[in-house]
Image (tube, rainbow over all chains, first blue to last red; front, side):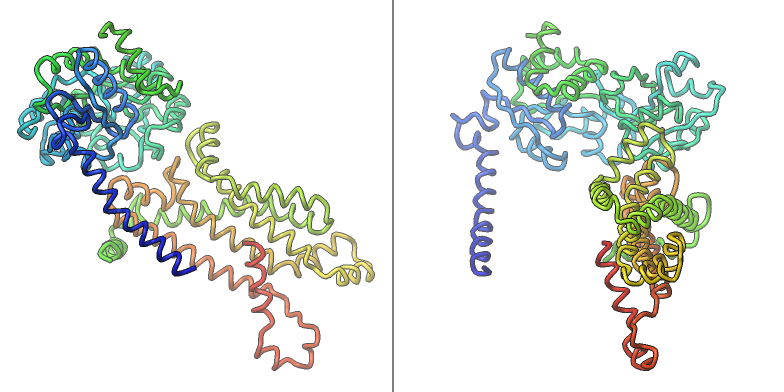
Length: 307
Length: 246
């Protein structure tokens, strides 16, 4: 038993360097072999994505738009965390990657004080390392935001966090418990917008319980991701945040020099059509209909007349 | 190890214990929620368990239902109930009651069932009514196993009551969740340690209770008191219930 186990273990361990080698080769194919489609050589644009369904849909849209424009595209999707894939991009193994302005800026400049979309984008243009650039940012965002029900928004005429100060009824903010101590929690609302709220912790990250609590009027304001399908499904209203309590996180393509001007123009055109509502609709299709990213991307591009 | 030191430092800081959301308040809340849950679960499970153990009827159904209830994921049930009832304590309490019932039920019916038939027949023979048999014979003899069930239910509930904070501003889970999400791992670990400490204290108290309610049986003991004290029979009777109920 034990000797067999030991033999198996050592066999398995022996595989580890082999696998590491194989994956290293996979990433760097293009550098050593110009005929391979796997790497960052001149003819092929490698499109990457996070391991996040919404991001993958955007990446797929970029990829298909480029293919339609006559480019060879290789897909390197479902890369994990920013810490993992950004070095790959910086090394030139991935040419095009849908990113989010605020978080990626904070990766390169942890001390940045930019919060609002345009400030963040301007800072990001400065912060990208050599060999990379950001294309136009999209209106589509994927960030935390204050969300209210449509009825609430209409009854009290609230479309911005600043309007909340005039609401005559007591307000409760529902969000993950850490929000209580964050700048966008009750203290931030009070200090920045002059809105006094109670706090109700709901630990499902803006999930179904949070949405239900909004509908039940147990809470009047929730912190929910702007790209969450339930915003569209339940007809919720995302409030403007003119003072930037939440870090702006607009969809922005990160491109290497391997993406030429013509390709960049294609992506910019696509990105311009991608709105906040549009991105949510795409996410709804993924979550509700379980459609694959490639199908969703194809239908959207055709709908928009982009291919 | 550094993290443990940080957690310890957090616990040793007086200001973390006071105030509205301080550790002391959270600890008391946690205890109250756990008590409420075990109380409700006991009201449901103990009479049912005693009934099943006494009559021997419905045993299969109860065993199956209790096993099924054990398999229910607490967080899933909590979410489901909270979606129906809204945020607040209802969801967590219902989910935790479902968690606590199986142990209590098993303790109750196994305890009553384990009472020697000869003893019960003797009780009937001296003219006791069924109610008297239950109250004065079965329940006292079932007590160690019953408390054993209470022990394991309490342990589970105290450890899981952190979930109360999933939808309510209550309990040590608040510190746990806040620490987790804000990456303040010292707070997280400190609150986890408080949960552990609370569980251990309750476990100790209930173990003591279990020892107290264990009847001094061992038939040939009347004239062998010294020997019995040297080898307390209660330790044997005390071990078996936890094995059976857990």
